[in-house]
Image (cartoon, rainbow, N blue to C red; front, side, top):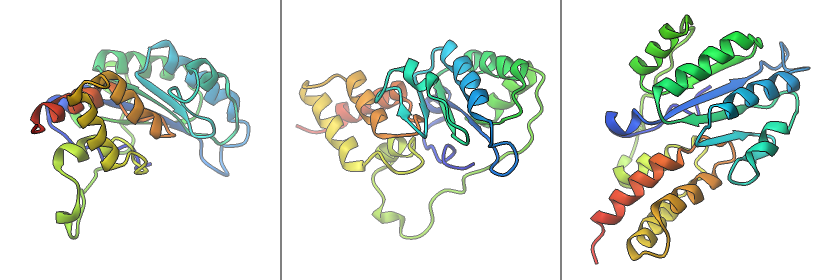
Length: 210
């Protein structure tokens, strides 16, 4: 699963950004996975994620987190975002205890994720790296913009919207926290970190001229 691992940013910024994803395997354990995925979402919600979603219904900024948890369908993919390693470790400990037989993927700084696995007695099965973007990279948005847009692995957070939100934060028509939530709402999976987005938007706003 790769759509959660293309995040860009500094170590300091990424140290407050961890995505937990649970996905059944089609043809193996997808049939009958709905109730298990709901149990996983219950655990995710119990640890107060800053974003959470189910690809079959959407994220917690489109629906209430209670509705996201209650929705149940075989073969779905569920996600939650946390901002610190202690919470991440607690989530992994509870998922280990549940032992639902569903694959769990964690995206974050490698050493931090490894430490969380070690703390909970888990072994890393596979490590995936993002090799970045190749080609005519001069056509990409600015680094500051990419730090936000890459939080949505399916590209649903538009660069122009990010720039617009930063401009609105600067003019005072919206707070950085409100803007971060608006950007998070665009990502159906629920993997955009609105807290980190707000921090990055605030910095962009402060750098804008005028």
